[in-house]
Amino acid sequence: MPDHLNLPTPDAIFFDFSDSQWHFTLEGAVKIANAYPDTPLLLCHWGSVDSPDFVEFNGNPEDLKDLVKNPERIYVLAPGEPFILKKLSK
Image 1 (cartoon, rainbow, N blue to C red):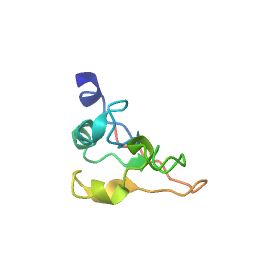
Image 2 (image 1 turned 90 degrees about the horizontal axis):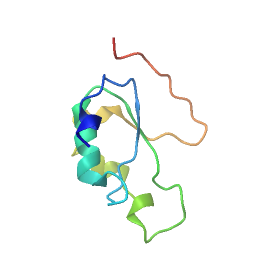
Image 3 (image 1 turned 45 degrees about the horizontal axis):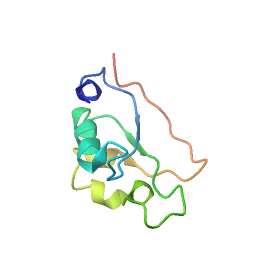
Image 4 (image 1 turned 60 degrees about the horizontal axis):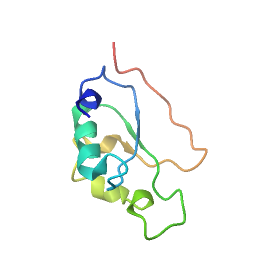
């Protein structure tokens, strides 16, 4: 949705990057990520369900590195691993 691309800069995005028509699709997810090139991307919704035949749960975080601007902002956190949120927007 165009509205997702014109929001105030978020301090972080819980980022669902699966290539699924039920979600944003990978192309749509990359558009959102690149609309906010300095926002940390906290990857979610991948590897969360034991369902190897569903792309919704099996995206590869490594695939994002060549697709998003500033790939160093991709975070793959273990369950319970802390993330220190820093204010980006004014």
